[in-house]
Image (cartoon, rainbow, N blue to C red):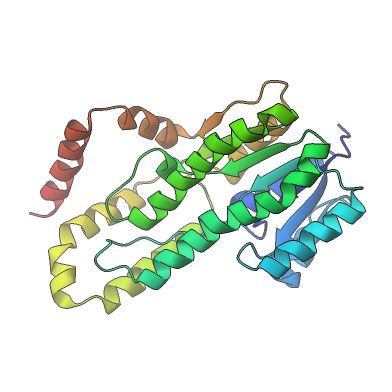
Length: 282
């Protein structure tokens, strides 16, 4: 299939972003693949066609966004069909222990960065009656203990998606949320390394207080059945190509399970989670 339509993707160095770039390139789209380091773009080009263009784009850097959007606009005649907001980071930890600087970092990348890129891209997308796809998470649906910062950022992504969808609908545009569960990605290694370092730095009394929750988190992480990132890429391509894109795509059994759990009465859901924490803490 040859589309030759321009798609911009943030955070394509690894994981979901890379899978989306490869998949959409194979479908014939002209992909601008956002990376923060030139070498990441070089590596990506080895696996793609000449239609894929790596572009330096740091979603937390205003000058980087302006430069990238300006270049894309010039090279695409100010008309872009799709934006895939994928760039994001994961930071786990109970609120009492998680440094405020890390909370700000999560929000800056996952929320402010997404909004800044989207705001800059809307004029180009409006001309092409384009589509926006925001990559959420199972944490866009259900907030877990020990993940307040990350869950807050992904709930925000869901809220942004719902609000923005109505704002740009009159222009013939669509906005979709893709909410995957556990996906094969380097984000897990980075997240686990961050969590281990956080525990090392925590005061002994804090480590003891939250030990049951830490054990639950470890058990859940060890039991995760991660799906290939390509499954998420397929959902993204549907949101970009379907005549009736969905408002929300749940990718993976754990995402679908979280959506069901989120509909349970809060008191009952809290009881279930606390019971599991208590059981592991004995």
